[in-house]
Amino acid sequence: PEIAPGRQRNVVGALAGLLVVALACGAALAVDPASPLRAGTGAADVVPTGETTTVEVAAVGMRFVPDTVRVPAGDRLVITLRNDDPTTVHDLYLANGTDSGRVSPGETVTVDAGVVGASLEGWCTIAGHKAMGMTFAVEVEGGDPGGVGGSGAGGMTAGGHGGHGGHGGPGVPAATDAIDVMSPPSDYHETRDPALAPAPGGREHRITLTVEETTAELAPGVVRPVWTYNGRHTAPTLRGKVGDTFVVTLRNEGTMGHSIDFHAGDVRPDEVMRTIPPGEELEYRFTVKRAGAWLYHCATMPMTGHVAAGMAGALVVDPPDLPDVDREYLLVQSESYLGGPQDAFDMDKIAARRPDIVMFNGHATQYLRDPLTARAGETVRIWVVVAGPSDGTSFHVVGAQYDSVYKEGAYTIRDGRDAFGGRDGGAQALDLAPAQGGFVEMTLPEPGRYTFVDHSFADMEKGAAGYLDVTR
Image 1: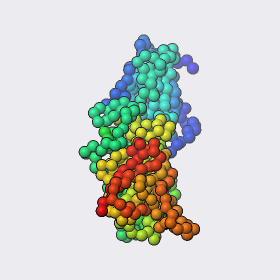
Image 2: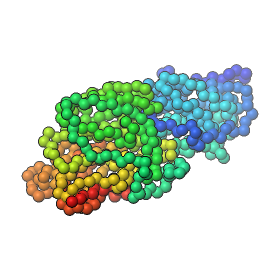
Image 3: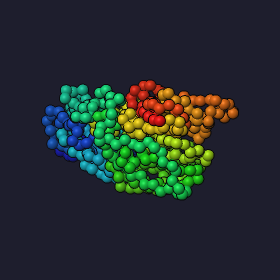
């Protein structure tokens, strides 16, 4: 309808009664306000009308409601943005440089987009949210249809914001740069100890997992934001026995919603696996009923992004008859999908299943610099858990044969015997799909350097390799 001249125009979204399919709440890292990706181009040339169009917009269920507003050319646009998600931080960025900043659950902010003379694209900059449909459009009536953020000269498109490459300065290569997976980690990178400690005594284990958003080197010279439990990409390894109870306190000290899902817990998920906002904590209690190498991970959407950003780990539950061995290690294999230097991941690469790095325990080359070790004649057990989020593994030790293979709670071969009593058998690889786990055992009779790899060679060449050094 026509709006009388001289009156403030109010365009209020029909929020009440509009059905929104609420996806599982998710959150991720927003681009730093200082980033050049945040630069705007300003309004197109237009004669200001002196009028103001005010709109109300809600952020809920990975959508803006309404997701399109219409504004007469030359009006000042003011957006009242309300975050109706109970746990998830959102924001709204417009291609002319207008930025709401982060909006906490339940918070309302006023966003002044200035005088607009051309249509604008907008989106939530929290990583993964735009890819899940959290986009916004300002359509200008009577202005330049190309507009800022469209195809007009100088406009910034939505696709240009969100970390698809770009150089991050010295030591931070672009996502498209070649990654040298044979170079050693930087001197400041502390290699993750792969040795697996025995299960602790007692039948109840209390653990605190604190969400921290930080940065880490993932491959030589490749430094990116990571999201962690207790400060490191790839979460702490936990261990217990069948019948043990785990009492986990999840504390969110990040800037967005996070959660946790223990595959070893046989529990109703809607309470203990819920996303909690920054500053809150929950207690997750479960008793393990079955042996295996179990994954745990953040279950906040987009889960692919949260797992790829580092929020995954292993909980080992010993089989009741697990024998002692001379050496015991654990490797969590995961993928990284590099975006820009300020992005924890790239959703387009995740959707296309094109990882840049595949690694063990959070770094592509740490076990080339600091190998696993054993002595000739010792029995070595290596546990492997695949965090993904999307690739599996074919775990192989070059020059070795496995006489025992345990996968997903059962032996496929044990001491050279299969389930039917066959003798003198062996195995060359442990095949695991995402979220699966198991172990292999081998005895290496000769000293030397043995390379362990994902025998999917494309993944090996992206970093899924390390050394096992055997001495006399």
